[in-house]
Image (cartoon, rainbow, N blue to C red; front, side, top):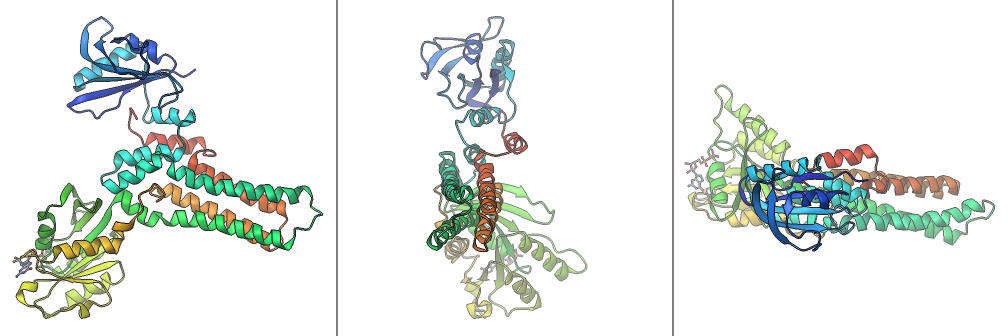
Amino acid sequence: MAQTIAAISTAPMKSALGIIRISGDDALSVAERVFCGRLSQSPREMVTGKFLSQTGDTLDFGMAVYFKGPKSFTGEDSVEFFCHGSTAVLSAVLSSLFKAGAHPAKPGEFSERAFLNGKIDLTQAEAIIDLIDSDCELAAKNAAEQMNGAMGREISSISDSLTAIAAEFYAYVDYPDDDIPETERDELCKSLALCAQKAKGLSGTYERGKLLRDGVKVALVGRPNVGKSSLLNAILGTDRSIVTDIEGTTRDTVEESFSINSLTLHLIDTAGLREAEGEPERLGIERSRRAIDSSDLVIAVFDGSVPLDSYDREILSIAEKKRSICVINKNDLGCVLSADNFSPLPTVVLSAKENKGTDELLALICKTVGASDIPCDGRTVTNPRHASTLMRAHDAIVSAAEGFKNGTYPDLCVTDIENAINILGEITGNCAQDVIISEIFSRFCVGK
Ligand code: GDP
């Protein structure tokens, strides 16, 4: 018996429309106590009507749709109300629903019910959060494909192969006196190696998947007056869309976020920060070092019109240890520096002041982080839980394969293979512990 729950699914702000969701065994009867319209006669069709308080006052005029379970998002009888997007109206309609018998939904409870009723697997549920949180087109595209089951299918294809391999092993467990023929042994080892490789390969996509989901952290560093602020302005001053202005987590850096090629870049900007009294150079280098440490990509800026000094060299030596691009700025003044000074790091010569060369820099940034060719077909892992769990599955498969090669009894190999299948089940939710499931859904917002 599924208790009937209700919640506002849209953001708590003034807007044209606001949506309320209701789900559970009594969804229709509860909804009909609030919505005056022909709901039950027309499942899956929008019907117009009015929303009433439990004392009969009209709260709003709008539309509603009834989904008869199991053909609904949650798999249960569900109703969605489309009201006007006034927080007062939505609260009043919701409170009328509670008086009519609905209970407040917990964060993620609609999605959790969809998962528990087998409408979606855990990867699809997690992709819903990713889709809602995505702030660039590529991340949204990948999340949408995962919501459509792309990641679940990848994981299942590995577990299905493992299940088939385990079945072959069982044959030898049942007849321990039979020797496994050499060709058969080779085949089994090859099949296990292929599964291990697939799991590792999929987990490896997280390195770039992380950039999709979280954006690319770019540190802009260099000694004072080389033109960092000017470069930042030149980059942002073009038609890039500025996503947010976030105060950095450390008080002496500022993050500007913007997108290029549909990928979000968070520029950790040490520009414009006043040098502290006392030991300016040491403090400046320290600040750059911190920005560099926390970044995915470094843009080290140098004043091309003068030779490198010790401050520049220190910045360069830190940048050399990370994925970096060097910028020789102030090209308009005539350059005494060239790409040779920074070889083998990729280098762009430009003039921030005249805004010449910034497009080349942006193209190089995209190329360096591999932004243009991150696959967004849902098979790029963007979730750290999936990446680490895949590696655990990989290790269990490798353990089965190595044990088998070294003469371990088939029944022990089967245990490792079953272990790997169960680990993969943690990703799709087939074998996930309740505590993991609750933790995942608690990260959802109410109404989702
Ligand atoms: P920051 O301290 O590294 O952020 O450097 P700023 O961006 O504040 O620039 C320091 C000085 O260099 C300012 O006077 C800028 O106008 C000048 N500047 C920056 N970029 C260029 C450039 O490409 N060419 C020339 N000629 N001057 C530049």
